[in-house]
Length: 421
Image (cartoon, rainbow, N blue to C red; front, top):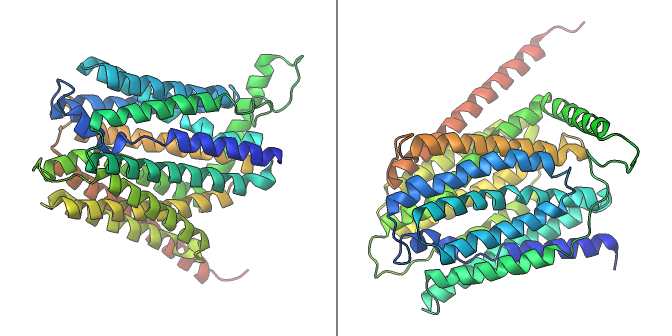
Protein backbone atom coordinates (compact mmCIF):
# COMPACT_ATOMS: atom_id res chain seq x y z
CA UNK A 1 0.00 0.00 0.00
CA UNK A 2 1.37 3.43 -0.97
CA UNK A 3 2.23 5.76 1.91
CA UNK A 4 -0.06 8.51 0.65
CA UNK A 5 -3.00 6.10 0.39
CA UNK A 6 -2.34 4.76 3.88
CA UNK A 7 -2.40 8.31 5.26
CA UNK A 8 -5.57 9.03 3.28
CA UNK A 9 -7.23 5.93 4.74
CA UNK A 10 -6.23 6.84 8.30
CA UNK A 11 -7.46 10.41 7.84
CA UNK A 12 -10.72 9.31 6.24
CA UNK A 13 -11.53 6.88 9.06
CA UNK A 14 -10.82 9.59 11.64
CA UNK A 15 -13.00 12.03 9.71
CA UNK A 16 -15.85 9.52 9.56
CA UNK A 17 -15.62 8.75 13.29
CA UNK A 18 -15.54 12.39 14.40
CA UNK A 19 -18.67 13.12 12.38
CA UNK A 20 -20.71 10.39 14.09
CA UNK A 21 -22.55 12.83 16.35
CA UNK A 22 -26.22 11.72 16.30
CA UNK A 23 -26.94 13.92 19.31
CA UNK A 24 -26.34 17.14 17.35
CA UNK A 25 -29.55 17.21 15.23
CA UNK A 26 -31.53 17.04 18.51
CA UNK A 27 -29.18 18.90 20.86
CA UNK A 28 -31.62 21.74 21.53
CA UNK A 29 -34.42 19.29 22.33
CA UNK A 30 -32.07 17.56 24.78
CA UNK A 31 -30.95 20.78 26.47
CA UNK A 32 -34.49 22.06 27.05
CA UNK A 33 -35.75 18.61 28.02
CA UNK A 34 -36.25 17.09 31.50
CA UNK A 35 -32.57 16.20 31.90
CA UNK A 36 -31.50 19.75 32.71
CA UNK A 37 -32.91 22.49 34.89
CA UNK A 38 -32.51 25.38 32.43
CA UNK A 39 -34.89 27.36 30.25
CA UNK A 40 -35.03 27.73 26.49
CA UNK A 41 -33.95 31.37 26.83
CA UNK A 42 -30.92 30.29 28.87
CA UNK A 43 -29.83 27.99 26.04
CA UNK A 44 -30.19 30.53 23.22
CA UNK A 45 -29.02 33.66 25.06
CA UNK A 46 -26.41 32.39 27.54
CA UNK A 47 -25.12 29.02 26.29
CA UNK A 48 -24.89 28.94 22.48
CA UNK A 49 -23.23 32.40 22.26
CA UNK A 50 -20.38 31.20 24.51
CA UNK A 51 -19.51 28.57 21.90
CA UNK A 52 -19.40 31.22 19.18
CA UNK A 53 -17.10 33.53 21.13
CA UNK A 54 -14.92 30.61 22.25
CA UNK A 55 -14.55 29.37 18.68
CA UNK A 56 -13.45 32.83 17.53
CA UNK A 57 -10.97 33.37 20.37
CA UNK A 58 -9.35 29.97 19.99
CA UNK A 59 -9.32 29.87 16.21
CA UNK A 60 -6.62 32.52 15.89
CA UNK A 61 -4.44 30.78 18.50
CA UNK A 62 -4.90 27.36 16.92
CA UNK A 63 -4.37 28.82 13.47
CA UNK A 64 -0.97 30.20 14.54
CA UNK A 65 0.26 27.11 16.40
CA UNK A 66 -1.01 24.36 14.08
CA UNK A 67 2.06 24.49 11.88
CA UNK A 68 4.34 25.00 14.90
CA UNK A 69 2.90 21.93 16.69
CA UNK A 70 3.10 19.76 13.57
CA UNK A 71 -0.66 19.14 13.22
CA UNK A 72 -1.05 15.74 14.91
CA UNK A 73 -1.12 16.97 18.56
CA UNK A 74 -3.97 19.32 17.69
CA UNK A 75 -5.89 16.55 15.93
CA UNK A 76 -5.59 14.50 19.12
CA UNK A 77 -6.64 17.60 21.11
CA UNK A 78 -9.75 17.83 18.93
CA UNK A 79 -10.70 14.30 19.94
CA UNK A 80 -10.02 14.99 23.63
CA UNK A 81 -12.14 18.15 23.44
CA UNK A 82 -15.00 16.14 21.96
CA UNK A 83 -14.73 13.61 24.79
CA UNK A 84 -14.87 16.46 27.32
CA UNK A 85 -17.88 18.12 25.69
CA UNK A 86 -20.04 15.01 25.50
CA UNK A 87 -19.04 13.73 28.94
CA UNK A 88 -20.15 17.07 30.40
CA UNK A 89 -23.39 16.92 28.41
CA UNK A 90 -24.06 13.50 29.92
CA UNK A 91 -22.94 14.00 33.51
CA UNK A 92 -23.51 17.64 34.41
CA UNK A 93 -26.76 19.57 34.78
CA UNK A 94 -26.11 23.23 35.64
CA UNK A 95 -25.98 26.34 33.47
CA UNK A 96 -22.37 27.13 34.40
CA UNK A 97 -21.22 23.65 33.36
CA UNK A 98 -22.97 24.10 30.02
CA UNK A 99 -21.14 27.39 29.47
CA UNK A 100 -17.82 25.73 30.34
CA UNK A 101 -18.44 22.87 27.93
CA UNK A 102 -19.15 25.43 25.21
CA UNK A 103 -15.58 26.65 25.70
CA UNK A 104 -14.37 23.10 25.03
CA UNK A 105 -16.72 22.91 22.04
CA UNK A 106 -14.95 26.00 20.72
CA UNK A 107 -11.68 24.06 21.07
CA UNK A 108 -13.22 21.11 19.23
CA UNK A 109 -14.28 23.32 16.32
CA UNK A 110 -11.12 25.44 16.20
CA UNK A 111 -8.77 22.46 16.07
CA UNK A 112 -10.50 21.09 12.97
CA UNK A 113 -8.14 23.30 10.97
CA UNK A 114 -5.32 20.89 11.89
CA UNK A 115 -7.27 18.01 10.34
CA UNK A 116 -8.02 19.88 7.13
CA UNK A 117 -4.44 21.13 6.65
CA UNK A 118 -2.58 17.98 7.76
CA UNK A 119 -2.59 16.59 4.22
CA UNK A 120 -0.72 19.61 2.85
CA UNK A 121 2.20 18.86 5.15
CA UNK A 122 2.16 15.07 4.97
CA UNK A 123 1.03 14.12 1.46
CA UNK A 124 2.94 14.96 -1.76
CA UNK A 125 1.30 17.67 -3.90
CA UNK A 126 0.54 15.19 -6.67
CA UNK A 127 -2.00 13.48 -4.40
CA UNK A 128 -3.72 16.54 -2.87
CA UNK A 129 -6.84 16.14 -5.01
CA UNK A 130 -7.26 12.43 -4.28
CA UNK A 131 -6.76 12.76 -0.53
CA UNK A 132 -9.00 15.82 -0.34
CA UNK A 133 -11.79 13.93 -2.12
CA UNK A 134 -11.33 10.88 0.15
CA UNK A 135 -11.49 12.90 3.37
CA UNK A 136 -14.38 15.03 2.14
CA UNK A 137 -16.36 11.93 1.19
CA UNK A 138 -15.64 10.35 4.59
CA UNK A 139 -16.84 13.44 6.44
CA UNK A 140 -20.05 13.64 4.42
CA UNK A 141 -20.64 9.90 4.87
CA UNK A 142 -20.20 10.29 8.63
CA UNK A 143 -22.66 13.18 8.77
CA UNK A 144 -25.26 11.39 6.65
CA UNK A 145 -24.93 8.18 8.67
CA UNK A 146 -25.16 10.17 11.90
CA UNK A 147 -28.37 11.94 10.88
CA UNK A 148 -30.04 8.75 9.63
CA UNK A 149 -29.04 6.86 12.79
CA UNK A 150 -30.37 9.61 15.03
CA UNK A 151 -33.67 9.82 13.16
CA UNK A 152 -34.23 6.06 13.19
CA UNK A 153 -33.48 5.76 16.91
CA UNK A 154 -35.83 8.62 17.79
CA UNK A 155 -38.62 7.69 15.36
CA UNK A 156 -38.60 4.04 16.46
CA UNK A 157 -38.45 5.00 20.16
CA UNK A 158 -35.26 2.97 20.46
CA UNK A 159 -33.50 5.83 22.25
CA UNK A 160 -34.23 9.21 23.78
CA UNK A 161 -32.33 12.46 23.24
CA UNK A 162 -29.96 11.76 26.12
CA UNK A 163 -29.09 8.30 24.81
CA UNK A 164 -27.86 9.83 21.56
CA UNK A 165 -25.11 11.55 23.54
CA UNK A 166 -23.74 8.16 24.64
CA UNK A 167 -23.26 7.20 20.99
CA UNK A 168 -21.53 10.51 20.25
CA UNK A 169 -19.32 10.12 23.32
CA UNK A 170 -18.30 6.63 22.18
CA UNK A 171 -17.50 7.92 18.69
CA UNK A 172 -15.32 10.68 20.17
CA UNK A 173 -13.41 8.07 22.17
CA UNK A 174 -12.88 5.94 19.07
CA UNK A 175 -11.80 8.96 16.98
CA UNK A 176 -9.27 10.05 19.60
CA UNK A 177 -7.73 6.60 19.83
CA UNK A 178 -7.59 6.38 16.04
CA UNK A 179 -5.85 9.78 15.83
CA UNK A 180 -2.92 8.31 17.74
CA UNK A 181 -2.16 6.13 14.69
CA UNK A 182 -1.72 9.11 12.35
CA UNK A 183 1.93 9.48 11.25
CA UNK A 184 3.77 12.38 12.87
CA UNK A 185 4.70 15.35 10.68
CA UNK A 186 8.39 16.27 10.51
CA UNK A 187 8.47 19.03 7.89
CA UNK A 188 5.82 21.76 7.76
CA UNK A 189 5.18 24.75 5.53
CA UNK A 190 6.34 27.52 7.88
CA UNK A 191 8.03 26.58 11.16
CA UNK A 192 9.65 23.26 10.24
CA UNK A 193 10.64 23.61 6.60
CA UNK A 194 14.12 22.20 7.26
CA UNK A 195 15.37 20.15 10.17
CA UNK A 196 18.41 22.11 11.27
CA UNK A 197 18.93 21.59 14.97
CA UNK A 198 21.75 24.10 15.12
CA UNK A 199 19.56 26.93 13.79
CA UNK A 200 18.39 29.34 16.47
CA UNK A 201 14.66 29.22 17.33
CA UNK A 202 14.37 33.00 17.06
CA UNK A 203 15.64 32.85 13.49
CA UNK A 204 13.20 30.05 12.64
CA UNK A 205 10.30 32.08 14.02
CA UNK A 206 11.29 35.21 12.13
CA UNK A 207 11.71 33.23 8.92
CA UNK A 208 8.31 31.56 9.39
CA UNK A 209 6.45 34.80 10.06
CA UNK A 210 8.21 36.52 7.17
CA UNK A 211 7.03 33.78 4.82
CA UNK A 212 3.50 34.01 6.25
CA UNK A 213 3.48 37.77 5.66
CA UNK A 214 4.68 37.27 2.09
CA UNK A 215 1.94 34.73 1.37
CA UNK A 216 -0.74 36.95 2.92
CA UNK A 217 0.32 40.05 0.98
CA UNK A 218 0.65 38.17 -2.30
CA UNK A 219 -2.72 36.50 -1.90
CA UNK A 220 -4.90 39.39 -0.73
CA UNK A 221 -3.24 42.00 -2.94
CA UNK A 222 -5.02 40.13 -5.72
CA UNK A 223 -8.42 41.84 -6.02
CA UNK A 224 -9.96 38.68 -7.46
CA UNK A 225 -8.94 36.66 -4.39
CA UNK A 226 -10.10 39.45 -2.11
CA UNK A 227 -13.53 39.62 -3.77
CA UNK A 228 -14.19 35.88 -3.52
CA UNK A 229 -12.68 35.63 -0.03
CA UNK A 230 -14.94 38.41 1.26
CA UNK A 231 -18.03 36.56 0.00
CA UNK A 232 -16.64 33.28 1.39
CA UNK A 233 -16.32 34.85 4.86
CA UNK A 234 -19.70 36.62 4.82
CA UNK A 235 -21.57 33.59 3.51
CA UNK A 236 -19.84 31.15 5.86
CA UNK A 237 -20.74 33.43 8.77
CA UNK A 238 -24.39 33.37 7.70
CA UNK A 239 -24.48 29.61 7.19
CA UNK A 240 -22.90 28.81 10.57
CA UNK A 241 -25.30 31.19 12.32
CA UNK A 242 -28.35 29.75 10.58
CA UNK A 243 -27.24 26.18 11.30
CA UNK A 244 -26.50 26.96 14.94
CA UNK A 245 -29.96 28.34 15.76
CA UNK A 246 -32.13 26.41 13.29
CA UNK A 247 -33.30 23.91 15.91
CA UNK A 248 -34.46 26.81 18.08
CA UNK A 249 -36.71 28.07 15.28
CA UNK A 250 -38.02 24.56 14.55
CA UNK A 251 -38.83 24.13 18.24
CA UNK A 252 -40.90 27.32 18.18
CA UNK A 253 -42.74 26.40 14.96
CA UNK A 254 -43.18 22.78 16.02
CA UNK A 255 -45.23 23.52 19.16
CA UNK A 256 -47.15 20.22 19.28
CA UNK A 257 -45.16 17.65 21.33
CA UNK A 258 -47.24 14.81 19.88
CA UNK A 259 -46.01 15.38 16.33
CA UNK A 260 -42.80 13.64 15.19
CA UNK A 261 -39.55 15.59 14.75
CA UNK A 262 -37.41 14.96 11.67
CA UNK A 263 -34.28 16.98 12.47
CA UNK A 264 -31.96 14.02 11.85
CA UNK A 265 -33.51 13.17 8.49
CA UNK A 266 -33.32 16.80 7.39
CA UNK A 267 -29.61 17.02 8.27
CA UNK A 268 -28.98 13.82 6.28
CA UNK A 269 -30.84 15.16 3.25
CA UNK A 270 -28.87 18.40 3.45
CA UNK A 271 -25.59 16.47 3.63
CA UNK A 272 -26.42 14.42 0.53
CA UNK A 273 -27.69 17.49 -1.34
CA UNK A 274 -24.57 19.41 -0.34
CA UNK A 275 -22.41 16.59 -1.67
CA UNK A 276 -24.32 16.54 -4.99
CA UNK A 277 -24.11 20.33 -5.20
CA UNK A 278 -20.37 20.22 -4.65
CA UNK A 279 -19.98 17.58 -7.38
CA UNK A 280 -22.13 19.61 -9.79
CA UNK A 281 -20.10 22.73 -9.05
CA UNK A 282 -16.95 20.77 -9.84
CA UNK A 283 -18.07 19.81 -13.35
CA UNK A 284 -19.87 23.06 -14.23
CA UNK A 285 -18.04 24.97 -16.94
CA UNK A 286 -18.63 28.70 -16.48
CA UNK A 287 -16.36 31.71 -16.89
CA UNK A 288 -16.56 32.84 -13.27
CA UNK A 289 -14.31 35.82 -13.96
CA UNK A 290 -17.08 37.25 -16.10
CA UNK A 291 -20.15 35.95 -14.24
CA UNK A 292 -18.85 35.67 -10.68
CA UNK A 293 -20.52 38.77 -9.24
CA UNK A 294 -23.82 37.79 -10.83
CA UNK A 295 -23.67 34.27 -9.35
CA UNK A 296 -22.71 35.54 -5.88
CA UNK A 297 -25.50 38.13 -6.00
CA UNK A 298 -28.21 35.66 -7.08
CA UNK A 299 -27.12 33.05 -4.51
CA UNK A 300 -27.14 35.59 -1.67
CA UNK A 301 -30.46 37.06 -2.78
CA UNK A 302 -32.15 33.65 -2.96
CA UNK A 303 -30.70 32.71 0.43
CA UNK A 304 -32.06 35.91 1.92
CA UNK A 305 -35.59 35.34 0.60
CA UNK A 306 -35.55 31.71 1.79
CA UNK A 307 -34.62 32.83 5.31
CA UNK A 308 -37.25 35.58 5.30
CA UNK A 309 -39.86 32.99 4.39
CA UNK A 310 -38.76 30.46 6.99
CA UNK A 311 -38.89 33.18 9.65
CA UNK A 312 -42.63 33.60 9.01
CA UNK A 313 -43.93 30.14 8.11
CA UNK A 314 -46.24 28.30 10.49
CA UNK A 315 -45.43 24.85 9.12
CA UNK A 316 -42.27 23.08 10.23
CA UNK A 317 -42.16 20.93 7.08
CA UNK A 318 -41.80 24.11 5.00
CA UNK A 319 -39.06 25.29 7.32
CA UNK A 320 -37.28 21.97 6.79
CA UNK A 321 -37.49 22.46 3.02
CA UNK A 322 -36.21 26.04 3.32
CA UNK A 323 -33.26 24.89 5.42
CA UNK A 324 -32.29 22.20 2.90
CA UNK A 325 -32.61 24.65 0.00
CA UNK A 326 -30.55 27.26 1.85
CA UNK A 327 -27.85 24.72 2.72
CA UNK A 328 -27.78 23.30 -0.80
CA UNK A 329 -27.24 26.77 -2.27
CA UNK A 330 -24.47 27.43 0.22
CA UNK A 331 -22.59 24.18 -0.47
CA UNK A 332 -22.89 24.68 -4.22
CA UNK A 333 -21.59 28.24 -4.22
CA UNK A 334 -18.96 27.78 -1.50
CA UNK A 335 -17.40 24.99 -3.58
CA UNK A 336 -17.11 27.32 -6.56
CA UNK A 337 -15.78 30.11 -4.36
CA UNK A 338 -13.16 27.89 -2.74
CA UNK A 339 -12.00 26.66 -6.14
CA UNK A 340 -11.70 30.19 -7.54
CA UNK A 341 -9.65 31.29 -4.55
CA UNK A 342 -7.44 28.18 -4.67
CA UNK A 343 -6.72 28.65 -8.38
CA UNK A 344 -5.48 32.19 -7.76
CA UNK A 345 -3.04 31.58 -4.88
CA UNK A 346 0.10 29.53 -4.32
CA UNK A 347 -0.39 25.95 -3.15
CA UNK A 348 1.66 26.55 -0.01
CA UNK A 349 -0.60 29.42 1.10
CA UNK A 350 -3.89 27.49 0.74
CA UNK A 351 -4.23 26.69 4.46
CA UNK A 352 -3.13 30.19 5.47
CA UNK A 353 -5.62 32.00 3.23
CA UNK A 354 -8.58 29.84 4.22
CA UNK A 355 -7.54 30.08 7.86
CA UNK A 356 -7.74 33.87 7.62
CA UNK A 357 -11.06 33.66 5.77
CA UNK A 358 -12.44 31.41 8.51
CA UNK A 359 -11.29 33.81 11.22
CA UNK A 360 -12.98 36.73 9.42
CA UNK A 361 -16.18 34.65 9.12
CA UNK A 362 -16.11 33.87 12.84
CA UNK A 363 -15.47 37.53 13.68
CA UNK A 364 -18.57 38.53 11.67
CA UNK A 365 -20.53 35.72 13.33
CA UNK A 366 -19.51 36.89 16.81
CA UNK A 367 -20.70 40.42 16.04
CA UNK A 368 -23.97 39.06 14.62
CA UNK A 369 -24.44 36.86 17.70
CA UNK A 370 -23.73 39.73 20.08
CA UNK A 371 -26.18 42.07 18.35
CA UNK A 372 -28.99 39.62 17.61
CA UNK A 373 -28.83 36.85 20.23
CA UNK A 374 -26.82 37.60 23.37
CA UNK A 375 -28.79 38.77 26.41
CA UNK A 376 -27.45 41.89 28.09
CA UNK A 377 -25.33 42.81 25.07
CA UNK A 378 -27.65 42.98 22.09
CA UNK A 379 -31.36 42.75 21.37
CA UNK A 380 -31.81 39.06 22.37
CA UNK A 381 -34.42 38.61 19.63
CA UNK A 382 -36.85 35.72 19.45
CA UNK A 383 -36.24 32.91 16.92
CA UNK A 384 -38.49 34.31 14.20
CA UNK A 385 -37.04 37.81 14.48
CA UNK A 386 -33.53 36.35 14.41
CA UNK A 387 -34.17 34.62 11.10
CA UNK A 388 -35.74 37.75 9.68
CA UNK A 389 -32.45 39.53 10.47
CA UNK A 390 -30.44 36.70 8.89
CA UNK A 391 -32.54 37.04 5.75
CA UNK A 392 -31.85 40.79 5.58
CA UNK A 393 -28.16 40.04 6.19
CA UNK A 394 -27.98 37.84 3.08
CA UNK A 395 -29.90 40.36 0.99
CA UNK A 396 -27.36 42.98 2.13
CA UNK A 397 -24.57 40.71 0.85
CA UNK A 398 -26.29 40.59 -2.55
CA UNK A 399 -26.47 44.41 -2.59
CA UNK A 400 -22.73 44.61 -1.89
CA UNK A 401 -21.98 42.34 -4.84
CA UNK A 402 -24.37 44.21 -7.11
CA UNK A 403 -22.28 47.30 -6.32
CA UNK A 404 -19.02 45.40 -6.94
CA UNK A 405 -20.36 44.07 -10.24
CA UNK A 406 -21.43 47.55 -11.40
CA UNK A 407 -18.04 48.97 -10.42
CA UNK A 408 -16.26 46.22 -12.39
CA UNK A 409 -18.51 46.78 -15.40
CA UNK A 410 -17.94 50.55 -15.38
CA UNK A 411 -14.19 50.03 -14.99
CA UNK A 412 -14.11 47.63 -17.96
CA UNK A 413 -16.09 50.15 -20.05
CA UNK A 414 -13.60 52.90 -19.24
CA UNK A 415 -10.68 50.64 -20.13
CA UNK A 416 -12.36 49.68 -23.41
CA UNK A 417 -12.89 53.31 -24.41
CA UNK A 418 -9.29 54.33 -23.75
CA UNK A 419 -7.54 55.06 -27.05
CA UNK A 420 -4.62 52.83 -27.96
CA UNK A 421 -1.12 54.20 -27.59
